[in-house]
Image 1: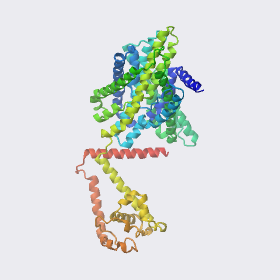
Image 2: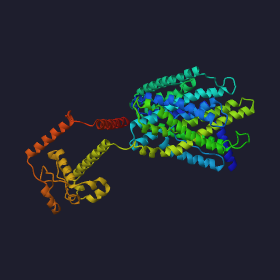
Image 3: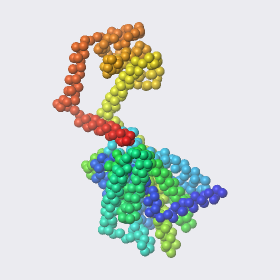
Image 4: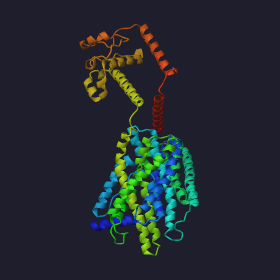
Length: 608
């Protein structure tokens, strides 16, 4: 029975390989890309657009060509240059998604490994998905510019890589010599096809995005939960229809169409969603399921290719020992190529858009992970090769083409595997080592000021509670155990809170707080600040008698003078234009304020 289970897995995999490659791409890519497009920061995306264009098109074309040279001159497989360029287009993009690569060489091991790595890939999603990388960068305090480069470049590279893949795979399929299969595309036609794929996909995506916003506007009624469900259905319909229209009907780039559709909906339709959380949760679940299914399928095919003799005519495994060596060499050369391309365009990218620096460029080069889109393209290439070559009468030629695309898929899976377990696991330490997450002195000051305000606000609320009979017997030591920053409270800070509570409370509603059980547990006073009122609370016991000396009375005239003095100081601080400020410090304070304002705005949107 174990043998039958093993055969069932292999037969299921072969059934998937029989599916048309366009169906595989149409099934997975729209659902994987729309959420990433929607989650992008539209403002930064517009500002950095030309930077992302440089990352996506000239750099991807350069990476495609250099990777093709490696495959053509270093690999001993005799691949045609068109296949090498197709291979380069698959690996040249920067796909930050979660890979999964189980093997099904034996009977029970494949199923177990598939399940384990599926779960593992879900856990490692936090390190490889662009949106999750952005969350990680947020937690570590990385610059917004770096987050934009990571997420924006991933999406744009997806689109450009598929454009180049479409061109060069057509040239490769033309080598089959079958009527209606492939096309011999020259340089002139290639550039024309490139512009049609890119700009046509962008136009179609914008059209579907505007149409989606129009529908969301008419569904923005908040009358029932059904309207929210219809809005979610509208977004998923827009994602798949824009991809289908662009890729299948108009023969343009479906990925670029989904990208521009998602960005348009984010820019103009986010405030029209009745239930923003429902939409996000639906797309997160959809993306998670599609990733798990894609990599379970890709991992099974990869395991079958590297461990079986189906494509090798009995001459040993497809992936022999020397092939694993070539895989390691390819990984190293791909890292060198990406570093070379990043720093070759560095003089341009640091002067346009939102700029960059050498540290951020180094991290972007190292974080170029390969995953979902590359696996989907390689799987599609292999599936279409099996489908097309079934019409070739020469079995030797048929086996040669299938072996070549199987090798391509094997190397693609291997590179994704290596970038997952090497690059993804070391991105965090590298980010810290480069100092990209080190908070500046200004940010530290803002955080410390916020912390002090939080402590003072909490103390005032605590003093307010002390006016109620039910809280007057609460042991302050218990409070210190449960509220850590209460351990830092001094006598002076506490008395300031008592006075502040008195100042903000109307005289008719003011009640004296019972603080005699709190004072004995406080630190010695830091300084002797005069109080505006000698009598803070009636009935203080003898333990605080020696502290009364620091509570000096002052007249009403002195209090008014202090208020006027503080008011003049406050006005001078805010409006004195002659005072010299640190430009970088002021700029960062403004950025922090804008970030807080934007976060508050989005919280209001989420609550309708």
